Amino acid sequence: MAAIINARVPPRVEEKLSEYCAKRGVTRTEAVVRALDHYFDHESGGASPYSLASDLIPPKGVKELQSGNVRELARKAFRGPRSR
Image (cartoon, rainbow, N blue to C red; front, side, top):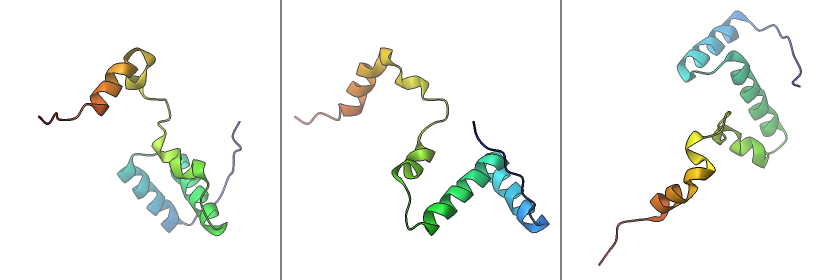
């Protein structure tokens, strides 16, 4: 289970956070977690492999990549224009 952290932020930071969330379509929690993760990675000298790929992993998986149609998707991906 994730920990809950309460923090007071100045009004200007809260305004920037609200604008960022509205523009990007993310929750305030998501934005703050990403910002802290980025900050700590930067401070420690580099990002971990997980943090580099975490934004590429969909939160609820990808429905198109179910085992029933993997072969069809692979064929489409590897089939290119045929040259004769």
